[in-house]
Structures are given as C-alpha cells and as structure tokens.
Length: 282
Length: 190
Image (tube, helix red, strand yellow):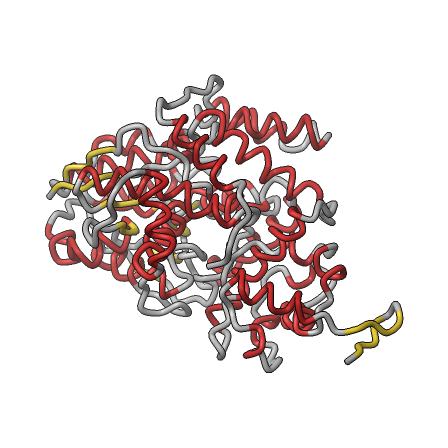
C-alpha cells in the first residue's frame, strides 16, 4: 500500500513525536508513505478566519501536488486535514472555484486521488481486523478517553464522519489494540484550539474541563489525533492535573511493538512514562 | 422599517443581511432562534452576545455593532453550532465572513491579540512557505508586548527539541506568495 503523506507545520516542531509515530506505525503496517515534496502550509485557522480566498488557495497548492503524485493522501493533523478536505470539497461541488484554482495554479483537478484523515483511513480503509492481527503487545488494563475534538469531526459534509456527537473510530481502534475506551461526554468538545496563545486563560479553562471529565470517567490517559489539541491538553491545564495525553499513533506504536517508541515519551510535556512502563512490563 | 437599539432607532439595513448571505453562502433567514447554537457554544461567556443573537443582529442589519464586536473574534471556529443547527446554517462560515468584512473595512479588531496572532502566523507561512513556530511566536510576543507569557513552557519545549531555532524555507514558497497575491483580490462569494 502506497500513500502520499502531508505532515503539516506542527509535525516538524511541537508535534515531532506525532510525525515519528505516524512513520513508525505505517512501517509496521507495511504502508509506504511518500512525503509530498516541498509541501506548503495549509493556512490553518488563521487563513479561514481572516481571508476566504487564502483559505481555499493555500490548500489548493497541496491538492495540486497530490493530483500530480496520483496517490491518495493521508493527513494526521486534524486541522490540516480539515483545510485540505474543505478545499477538495469546494473543488468538487463548486465549478467556479475549481476552474479558478485550475487556472491560477495551472493544473487539472480529477476526482481521484483523495485526501483522508489518517485515523479514518487506518480504521476504515486499512481495517481494524488487519491492525489487530499485527498487535504484539495488547494495551491490556489501559483505560483511555478518546478525544476527537473539532476538526476531524465537523462539519460532517466535509469530514465524512458518521456521527458528529458520538464518533467511534478512535474508540474502535483502541479496542482493536486491546485498550478499554471509557464512555464520556466530552469527546467532541473544543479545547480552545488556535486561541492558545492570544487567549490562554480561556483555553486553560476549556482544556482543563476536558481533562477533568476524562479522569472522572475513569480514564488513565487521553488519546487524540490533533497536534494543537495535544499541545493545549498538555500545556493549558490547571496546576496539579497530571493525566497524560497521547497521539493515537503513539499508542498504536506501543501495541505494534515499534522500536522507535522510546524516542517519543521525552517529547511529552506531561510525563507518560508510568503508563508506558506498565504496558511494556505486561 | 426601523429597529430600536440602545443608541436609538435606525433604519433596517438589509444590504448587510444580503451581503453576509451571499458571501458566506448561508441562509440567514432560515434561523428561527431556537438557541441550540448558543447552548453548545464553548466560548459563549467570552463575547458580548450569544451565537443566536449574532444571527438575529445580521437579520436586523446591525453591521457596526457586529463588526466592532469581540464575539466575532473570540469565535474559535469549532463548528459545533453549525453541526447542531436544525436549519443547517453553518454559523462558523458566517463568523469568517464577519471577520473578513471587519478587516476589509479597516475596523480595529475588538480582540487585537487574536488578530495579531493570525497575522504573525500567516506572515510566517508567506515568507517561508511553512509556518516556523518558534520565530512566529517570538514575533507575536514582540508585537503584542506579552514578552513574559509562557517563557517557562517555551524553554521546556525548546529543551525537548520541540521548537527548532532556525527556520528553513521551501523552494515552493514562490507559489505560496502567488496565492497570497491572488487572495488580496476582493472575494466574490462562495
């Protein structure tokens, strides 16, 4: 299986362990990832919050690259996925936008290949059965709160998710790895996202509530698929809150026995080693 | 028709209502004020009005009040309101349009730091092709004056190798700049 890969800016810096675990997990699953050469920023929230044309134009550069490569593209970051998928959606459903982008960037947009949220791709296309067959160290006794956040979920017509209130892909993936997902009601609530820097008190309030609810539901850890959620949940939390937060690919790497895993834990702002050690000691 | 506001009565400005509808692609008239959007809004307490009130104010053509509000800037774009709207109005798209119009009209954003952050983020993408988090954050700090915020956690991130000191740019940045130029043209709607 060969896919094109769009890491996005955060995976080069604050979420390096996400990039590393995405690559390790793909290797373990025999998926060949081809990084899009010279990929460029999707514009993220800052583009769509201030300039509609920019929010379509910046991802269109990547759509052009994906079309040239002719490979379906997986995007681990929820925010990048949402922006790329939104532009893809506009290009499919709005002939004016498609023609303008094709003319401006000198390319032709075809129905294939497509952009996928990496989590959804692994669960729905690669398949949970195929994943569970590769598990070497089941995540026994690990209770996780699966946190989806916003941008891999909403709006449903763009993300293609089955439920915006109670999505289950990540829960089902965790089950396939041997972990126990807890039932809780904050899985699609917002962490505060892009206001982390300019409105940090507000974000601490939102992220803190999510962590408290995860703990209340009996979770040992929170698992998610967004570099900004990860940063907010680790950095914008009330003092004394110590529940660790993982990228879903890190827990996959643990279960699949990826040797690269040892490099991930010291990147965390909240030490996850107690949980990691207990899984590895099983 | 006239509407009574805190500042007296004023004529209904349906041009504004129509412009928001056209540019956002959303049907403003479809809102019947069920308030489901507001009850699920995670940042409701940080703006001056609730989400449903924003829609009502657009229906009433209260352009100035909206474009000068905090509410349009603190909206984080989580899309919860739109996902729950029984009439399928994507309110996040409307918020994007309101902010864009405020910028076009040169109105000082009621939340200066939020706008400044967006500018620093986009400047980084424009000059390098990708956002370099460390220099982008440094620029925001210098311009906002919040120099000492997050110094501890910033240092921790740096020591963990999560903030690369020196940016590298990609050769495709010329394409990115072309898009920035193209995006400056006035938008025509969805």
